[in-house]
Image 1 (cartoon, rainbow over the protein chains, first blue to last red):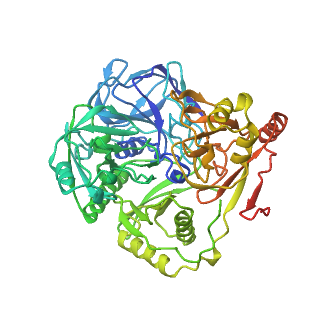
Image 2: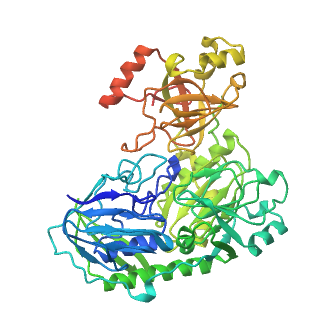
Image 3: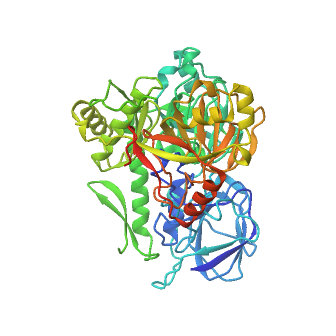
Length: 344
Length: 255
């Protein structure tokens, strides 16, 4: 363990995040985790980490950090006004930093959330198999809260290999974010609670992301979506999947994200396909949103293509063993698997 | 309240709805009842017993079960058929009986600042309120709202009270509250609008413990009145990690 950074200014909302708590929704624990999982995983790959290692997730305005040990970092996700010692910092690329350097992430220029990875990953306690910060539950990350000035951030260390900074992501693999977002959805589970008019409104309208949008969910504003009847607006509380589009009685959609409550009583007209979740998570207030219906085959195909992209990148990156195990990304019968092998 | 779990079948049919590319929602008859919740519990148990590769988690609720899976490891149509087959042919005789977990509660005083209000509102004495609240099994329909927060069924109608006009900014963890026709325990310190009538010395939720919550959906809770001295004594045992949780079956036999 080493201390990698001292927080000089925390930014708007900077939290430690990883893949999230995947198997605790049944006790009411939200998944938490990085909102843009694609950018998060690539940030880790660039510095040779396994894709489950914890990174910093920034929001709108990133932190300013003093580097306290020589290491390698990478910044992915939102394009932002980032600098090291006042000189512009490359993104989607591994970069060596030295003790005393000042990293300032600055303002997001395209997208909202950036991911700062560091070789071997951030060392905070593992809680329910994840290091992700869940602020409402006061757990994970640094004391269950966002970074604040004066925090010191520890990292794991590895004596095995010299950190390398030759990794970079080719241009076609770097996403950019439009302020006119089309989200592909699968209808249901409660699409039958909406009138034909209501469904037509949902698919034919342009919605605007409101200021009330955060890690829990995105509230949209636009033409109200009608239920089939007054009673159809009430359901007995049921489990909410990630990406569900809930319609409360005011008819305005709420998109459910990582920190949202696990159960709720609003009907869910549709659910965003997994491959498109990062598109909405990088959206900002004022951006436009359209919904388009797709079938299950297209949703799974998109997700498979995204995984294959990550696999291809994986073969280009140099990685090294760390913590107490080693990560492998393997394809079996055309399906991608994350395998993390660690000694008993 | 009557505990219904004798059935050997799924009680009635269910509908399987798609909920995105990574989950299926199994929807039972749309009602809040012990019978339907028992059917959810049976399917949840039977399904998890199969250990199907590609399943991430199941989330039980009042009258539905969400099955979350990895669509790159498991085909949705195969999963759908598996659920249908379980409904048709699973032998539920292996289903363990539900467990009743005893939650000791110190009622009133600084632990239950709203007990006096509840007495005034319901025209019951403190002893009557405590007896009505504690001498029964509550079905845990589901966990949600906060990590470890149980949605309980079966409160006595005489204990129906309104929420606070202005919610408290902070309710101590372990606080036991009632509001409208519901009762529950605050698993973590949080804002809250329920009338607080007592507090348990147990950590019903501890993020570092395995499992993090002392009880699971589909089982039962029973509140046991304790005095302040017992509260302190149990609290010390909880902190030392020596407290032995009291559990029994629905007929009151220790398990």
